[in-house]
Image (cartoon, rainbow, N blue to C red; front, side, top):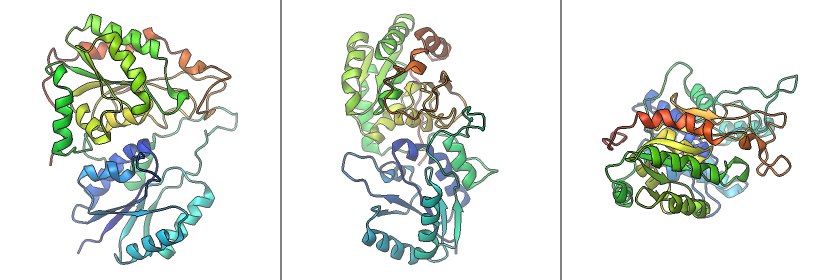
Length: 358
């Protein structure tokens, strides 16, 4: 009888989305096994948990939640895991310190009873530098996780989420005013100010798009915190050519709407990762706050625009002293040069959806 397989994955929305290729590869390697997710319970209702996303892969048998630092939650999790003997654990954690790794190994091996653990060994969230102080180019996080699962194989092609019928129907209804147009997904926002390219520059790129490609429509994605900026974009472009879904759709409805889009243009955010795992090519504007390539989107058809400076690797969430100079050096013309060739490849009318087979 095939043994059960557990996957441990926690983190923010982007952390969850970049794990999807690895999750799908686990499912391929264990086709006849039950898959369980172990993840942390969200601290409040507005947070998107890993389960909010991963349940829509249709791969998991069930989820086990725990609350970090809560003894009774951890004891209950350990007891639940021990009821499933001889299981394998894929430890797909975000970056951990050495102390956290030792703690987790002890908990999963001795408390939960896992004897077979495939573990990740990366140990820092800080920018990683060479001996001369230069920033190292690190593997993409999605590739790091995938190699942990299987160094030789590859997952099936994207898309990696299967939105339910209700989400698909709502997305189609919201996009009805742009029906028939090839659509571009825009992600001009971010919860981290240091990652936001300047709104006036997005406005200029969007004006060029609508002026030179009269059939194209624009769909703005993001959270409720992005809605005001998205409203400005739509007001400048015109409601007949654009729609604001920022703060209107949840993550799975956004995935369903992205199945109608042909290209993503925006910042390094969860929205970008969602576009990539739904199979969409991305033109992504990156700050240089972190190591190059670490958070590049899944897939090979993307363009990442980034400028490295002496202060790169700062890991700042707000850049006040340098006034976001690494982003300021990325011009409208540079972004347009990356976007325009892809616009020329779009069909004159929308022709298909990218969907995950049932």
